[in-house]
Image 1: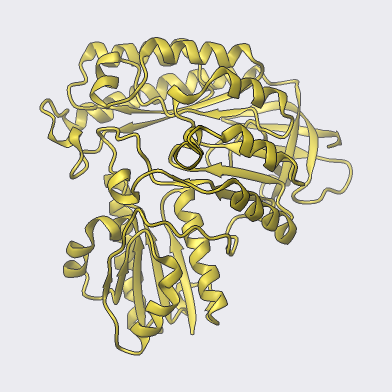
Image 2: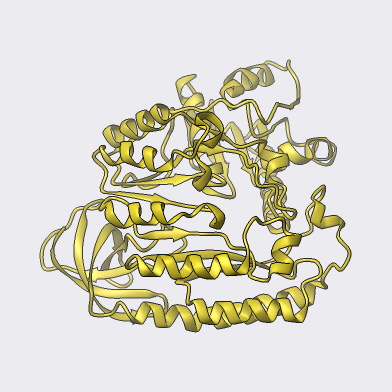
Length: 441
């Protein structure tokens, strides 16, 4: 039988999907990327905010249409299934099986029972019982891979449902992570390892009694990968020692992704964020003093009780801090979270207007930051060819895949995908650079 897996949501969910594919392939199933060819379609859902939930529901309905033709079984897994399994099982009779955010190693057995007409339709699981796996079928281009170093979250931000969906923070042992990275490099030729967790900066505290992120990076740096990228460092745990280490280690991308979420002390307190406005401002200054880093962050607008003064502080910060990349999200009132019960909920139109104001402001900031690099020479990981533009393209270490700036470039000599080349940045078009190879990296 052929199985197709559709992965929605974040890169952590993508890794879960890659684990599923490996379990199914090992059990003898043929994999397909075309839903029309699949006997079984699995949708690994996201349920983080309203827009993600709607995307998941739309995808379920879309894939259910294939049951009129070749598809025999439809399976829904992941965050939405974990959070709303009872409701989904009633609303979507066309779905043959539901599974939450854990127990993926049991998926082949569950599918076998489903095909044979026995077993349960809804498989609940203990979200705090981890089964980390190094078995993957890579769905990214072979020159980079995401590497999950922990699962769950203990931060308990009042707006966030992740602890209720993914459970408590659980780190993987250093040796397991390094073994997986070594296998990815050997099997696929990975050049960039992207470390992900809900909170990378807390790595190791739960199993070693202290944070062990630098020790993990030391071990990964011994492997034959060119770049190591860190995503999602919480501001209260970004110490000067870590930034000094990142600046000194040539394999660590000079890229700091810090979800600040707001700048007003009033709103930060309501969010249960363990950081103040002064600490965030000082943190940005400290990182800037250590060298040429790209700083990325995310912010929530329209949080309950966000006053005009609170928002004005955020606007002022975005203008003054000159962060390289920012994402702005309108607050989503998530079931079961403390923030959903707060008085002073903000009208949706106000949220969207504030979100638009910040994006307009940040666009000017980002353009200034991008222009400042023109004329410089940067290492670029060559990723492919844009046939419309008739140029090569790739990314520098200052840009994460799928969400950040691309570098389009030409070369007088043949190039090899997945290799790093020195490129002079000559022009800026929107958020993307155009340049030329000056020497081989």
